[in-house]
Image (cartoon, rainbow, N blue to C red):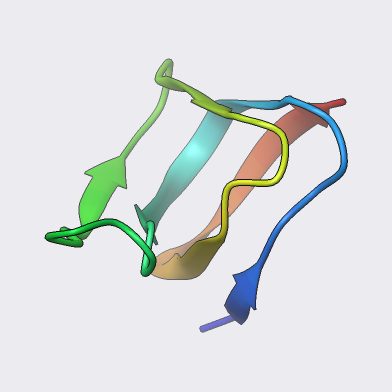
Length: 66
C-alpha cells in the first residue's frame, strides 16, 4: 500500500475518490485523527496544511485538483 509521508501543498487541494479508499490525517493538529474516505467522497485540504495519506488495501483511484 502506498504511503505519502507528512507534506503540504502551496494551494488548496481537492481529492475526489473514484475507486477504493484512502486514509488521511493531519499530524500537526492538536488531536490528530485518521479518517478513511471511499468512493464518492471529497476531501479538501487547505493550502499549507500538513497531511499524511495511506492508500487502502485495494488501491485508490482519485482525481486531485489544485
